[in-house]
Length: 204
Image (cartoon, rainbow, N blue to C red):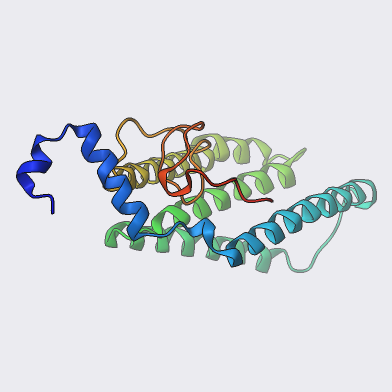
């Protein structure tokens, strides 16, 4: 049994290695679950098929959609979209107030809706007298706020990863989110996590 005095005599690197070893024993790695491997393979294949189908459908729309189209549901479409945007802001504010982890997803959803709002305003007002107002709205309000929300979501994800790394015994700066493996806390793209050391990467 290691007591506190012995722990204090260890170097920070030795304590980090010990903590990683304990975490690997107490918490089996999620990628060992065969059900997760199956769903991962299915999700990757479905995503690839969806990308191909959507690319073809986009090409069809680009060739067949009319230049002008009159609709009777203009007001419900835009009012419904704005209601969704208000709801997104409201849920985001609630999650921030309550300090819930779901705020990261809320920030990304709200930013996406703001970008969509700017895009449709600009696209639908192109060639009309209202285009410049839509452009000013996009540049001054919608896109800057969307960028702010995305950067705050990124900051929260990095802070969350920093806490996970610290509690798992990893030291050093948080690497780019593009380099952090799913379900792993080991920093760096070439380092094999302790929980998966000696095991081949699962097939896709």
